[in-house]
Image (cartoon, rainbow, N blue to C red; front, side, top):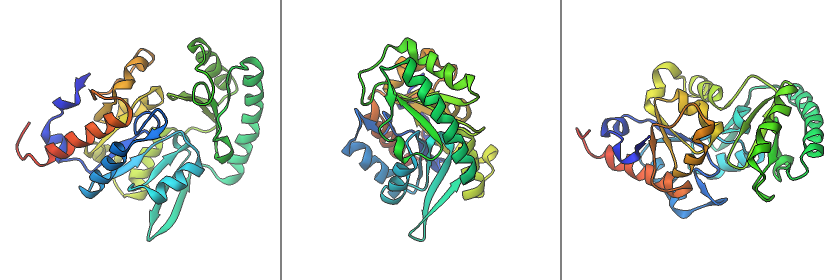
Length: 268
């Protein structure tokens, strides 16, 4: 990976927006720092669209879409996106209500199997606010587990026919053929009337963990905050650039460099 300092000015000058993870990308140790929140506002004031993409639940996404300077939010690893328009909340779900309810029933059985086999993990505290997935906490509100059990939990999901991804804090599983990347494509096409094949070059993605790998593979311009490094051994697709700082400070570092380079005409 190259340092974010090496990103060419022409890329920054042609950006329309930033897609980014939340946990351990925008946040640091579970907190949204002043520098990363200010970076969101700085990017917003500069005319960039901001789209957080997260495994966090619908309840969180509703709040973020309403309160943060963002253009839309993708939640539960691609199950939906919410956005504000004319001061009203709008929601697009990839599955209808009946399909989501059926998926939750099947996930309940998976949950029981995982907790019986691995009592050191627990259901994520935000599970109550989820529409489409099951989040298993392996280090947020429980002591960090032996990493060797993570592939075993992933296999339980997959054996039941569910998709599953690892974030920096949770293992998320769901039924359906969507993921973070496919919903990025849908958002570009349906919400902004853009052809993803032609418009992706005008967006940058920033993330930190294995569930960001599809975006690292698909977006032409990608950035990992510094804490992505320990996860690289689990990933085939790596970010092109990396920040010197971790978490929210790394995100702020990236935004500051992008905005500085946007002001420098002709620099490469």
